[in-house]
Amino acid sequence: MSTLWRHQLLLGLVAVLVFFTNLGGYALFDEDEPKNAVCGREMFERGDWIVPTFNAQLRTDKPILIYWLMQISFRLFGVSEFAARFGSAFLAVGTTLLTYHLGRKLYSPEIGLLAGVIVCTSLMFSAVGRSVTPDSVLIFCLTLAFTSYVWAVAARRGGHFSGVETSRAETPWIELLPASRVASLPMYAAMGLAILAKGPIGVLLPCMIIGLLLLVTLRRNDLTSGTLSPPSGPWWRRSLVTLVQVMRPSRILEASWRMRIVLGAAVVLAIALPWYVAVGLKTDGAWLRGFLGDHNVGRFLGAKENHSGPIFYYVIALFMGCFPWSVFLPLAVWQLRTRLVKGDSWGDSDRFVACWAGVWFVFFSFASTKLPNYVLPMYPALALISARYLHDWQLAPAGQGSVSFRHCCRILAVLGVLMMVGIPIAMSILLPGEEWLLLIGAIPLMGAALAFVASQREQRPRAIRILSASAIALAVLMLGIAPTRVGLHQDSPKLAEAARQAAGTSDIELATIDYFSPNLVFYAGHPVQLLVQPDDVARFFAEHPRGFVVTRSDKLKRLTKPMPQIVEVARHRRFLRNHDLVLLGRPTDIALHKAPLAR
Image (cartoon, rainbow, N blue to C red; front, side, top):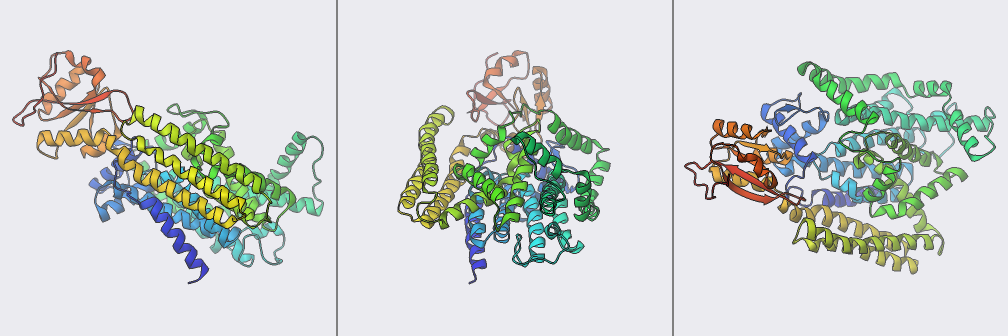
């Protein structure tokens, strides 16, 4: 078996283990998972491939691609948690393999293999790859676009992105573009799919990233030819002059034209525009106004749903999301900077991943609405940066870089200890009985300790293998096994099942007052009414004598006005809250063995 196939098989098995272990073995988690799953189910039940709805209301949050994937998986596997999550998991495996192919074209097969392991075991990426959200779909489409671009450039440079021989192109920067219109098509087609996954960001930022790479290379060419002079003076002046030199309008226009932006726009529109037009027509423009206006422009200009944060928000988010590999990320970024300043045989590759990560990070750092998943598309780039650092450390002479590597292991071990202390405390408050989850922290602790010892003995490849194995074990335990226990404490599946048992049928009518959970809609199997006033409760029971109402236990006093006699059917502690939820119903010929609530 060739090295290529051996690497792909190994990485595919690791990714399947991380993303498919017990994928359907636990309930959906509020709020995003059930919102998306219900939307996909409602479209599936209507046979509708155009208009997304949640709880029988128009849903303008996300475009259509994730719902199309769910419709396919629902047809294959039936409506279930596994089917709802299948598309995300399948594409997460694809992203892992694409990261490998990026790495081997940008650097080497060994770096690509390690980058694939890093990206699929970075906890935030592992989590979204197992979730019913469009993030995994977007990441796959964008990584596919960048892989198509890198492969097209590598094809004209002898098989490697940074080149293996002297090019005959008219200027060096031209080498960083696909050689023909046909070679550009896959890149732009993937961007078109990204627009169907999450909107205009799917084409705007990839073009900005590739464009910035071209502009930076153009400046380097102009400095070499003497067209520009190197900046001098204080650091702030040098930085400002460099920015002006990079962002010259004439060069921006030239780079855009060379990127075949008109062809790209035609390809992107041919793929994405038909659905956007169709949904606009079917909803009289309501979906377009809600999505493009509120969820794109609105989220960038103003903080939505209290999701704001300081300018350094994503520094913290990336440290948490890339765990356990994030302990090496500062060193990896510093090494990247050093290579960019001093020069490197893989310099074009370094500049590409730097533009990828840098543009995405800066763009969303200045957005008003901030969420950890907004920077997920830069995770493959960060994985490549980290893999390059660890690979270089592995091949370095004995003693070189050992101290810094061991410091990272110490930090990882300390974080493992903090997890072993903090998790039981948190579980005793939020999920009593699940204190055993402290074992999650033992994995990074043991991995760090063993890697530290291997480093002391200069067994560097072994240290990398230990870190990889511990990262895989952490992802599987934390995201594949632990949720089966945590999910047992969720309230919506229990309340919906209690209503079915009390009614003696799976066809139940549910409503809520002073409480709402998207998960309740998924497990009820059909739309749930939202009641506002106690009179609404009386009206609901008059219209649906065999219906049920869910409310908070601390809000029962609101239901003291005269209404049909009701009883408490079931009670369950609200997930991760300090109050109970109560399922209310009317005594009927189905015996409800609870006493009527005191008035």
